Length: 304
Image (tube, rainbow, N blue to C red; front, side, top):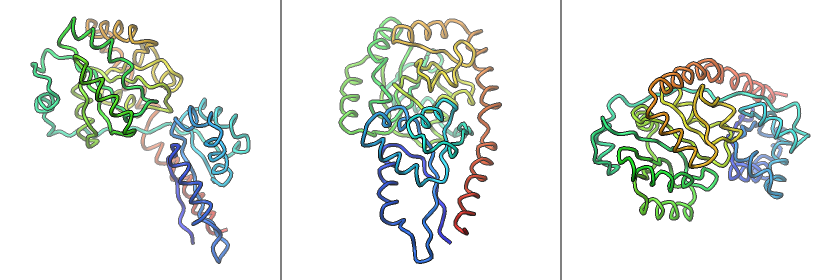
């Protein structure tokens, strides 16, 4: 029996999957191919599908995939519009969320390592979690935040994430070095990152496009307010002034951030609504059950 496989596919993963399907997954002596399914990540549908060669690669992979999973109905509709032959095999399952903050994490030590030398009691840390690549647009808010920090030295923007694109990473590092009130930290273990989220004032998302931001959902689960760029992927999970705040430009971000700092009642309402939303619509148990059912179909197909 051939093993089943499922993969979350970004553009690099799609290319690898296409190469693998064309070589190692040729029919074996018993006539079997390795059955597999794919999970749309977001950038693939929002960005890569508009590029001819990548679109062709993804279409070829989808022809062989036994199933595909989209996080939202709108993502499913976009995928079906790009690859009509995939209709009937695309399922919708939102991301399930479970957070595990490190109970032993030392917030003051983290601030010192980040060169934020102020009392934690007076700080407002805005945390932007993203891999350093252009689609995440980590520099989008830097200039506006620098101006705000110069007015109010207790506010900081901390950018946390892996160095995905080496060339773009150099650009980000150079810009942050010149910016006041902005700090750049590297990739962290998930439990430590969740502890940082729990201790920060708010989580920020400034992406050009998103499938479904796990960082936003994890912040909601940890009862931390969210400020997100008003793009379809974010607006699908953040309802303005209900589960978070949506901004359309850097100046609006600063306006909303200042409002959040000065309005504890708004913060409390957003946090409560966000936590309830995640509990209702992003259960990790439901996500697990969905994937178990899909994988069981793959395993069954190896016996055909």
